[in-house]
Image (cartoon, rainbow, N blue to C red; front, side):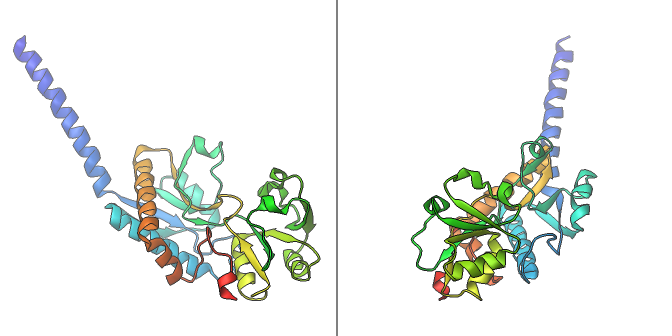
Length: 262
């Protein structure tokens, strides 16, 4: 009887050892397939598609190398990304979809690694530091975007809808309105070009919308997302993140205003 108990205990320990060893090997040996849409449809990137793709790819590869996991970057159309994620063709996808409460029931998301949320644009000599400073003033906004931008968060602002947000920027430059809320990347591109020295962006973006990794709710994928988040925060701390932004001709969404370009 005693021998049987000892044998049973030995088997339990052996099984536990093999299980955890197997889990460890599975994490180390696994190559995570991460897909992205190279065209970034339907984002309006104004010719920065290749810049953002190169930045994203190098960021992911750098984090993987630093954190000790392997990745294989793949491509798929916008409509096929989530479908192939659900089919387990991919382990994760690059998405700008919001991690809503409903989505979080089935999927895990990384921290955003490039913010794309809307920003406030004001005259270059404005003292505004945030959207709250625009109370009682007229702010242009894209028609139909009120829900996306959550404009009700500051009810005292007079929001004026524009079918074409470029007309809003022109009115702002001509002092007909006091500010414009619009998509982040186009705002920076126009402030850097047509309205150089006239308008500026007030950082940070008004929402945390941006590029993230999205994966199924699974321990293996969750472990990868945790490593990605840890690696991303390390790149922020050591400055590598900002070096990559500069290398690929992008801006830091948290700090860029356009004022230094004048």
